Length: 255
Image 1 (cartoon, rainbow, N blue to C red):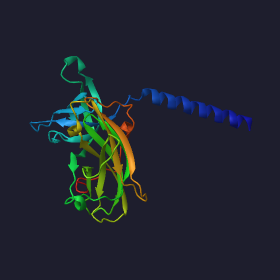
Image 2 (image 1 turned 180 degrees about the horizontal axis):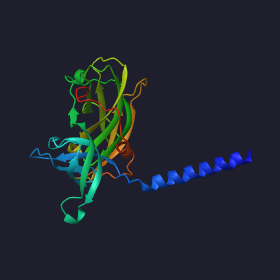
Image 3 (image 1 turned 30 degrees about the vertical axis):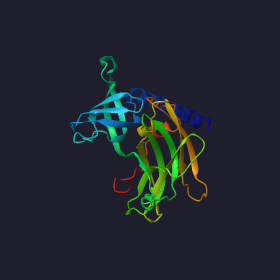
Image 4 (image 1 turned 60 degrees about the vertical axis):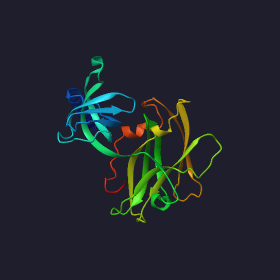
């Protein structure tokens, strides 16, 4: 019996040594980054610049597909490898290889009126995370759908409602179009909030109202929009885009 255990120990040790050798011989894998970017592509080319919310400028060198020509100003969630550092050029920061890219629903602030109240809707929705990057309020959210009905997402300002806290109150609205609740879906939307800037101050305090499922009171998100301030990886909620989301909304499902 002791001879058996001795042989077994030798086999286990040999296996561990071989595993260590295999691991040491493997090629190091390039780091994959995830970021929200705004496309700078006025000439609709297959190579173009993309600006991160921290103002770093990326050059689309290769990857994804060479027929990929997003519109100028389009917001994207991209996953990419950094090929080379170009900060010394003084023009841009990195050459990158894009491995995945997703269009992000991008809108401004909608000024609601009594006539548009019904079309905007106010159906329940779950917020995963909410953060400000550059001039955008970014919202990572989840909702239920049947797979065949268009849903509408908007950031709304209602001038009829009056608040006395010296903050700007906005509403994140969801119109489910009476859709069924069969499947859970997740997505990100970006809203351009630069229209809220004022020359007299360098920041504004926001309160975002959200109708959460099975709750009578709105869920409130307090955020501060500081002009010309980018987003870094330590901003609460920003880690969302550094984890691959496997269930993104197709373009036909939300608008």
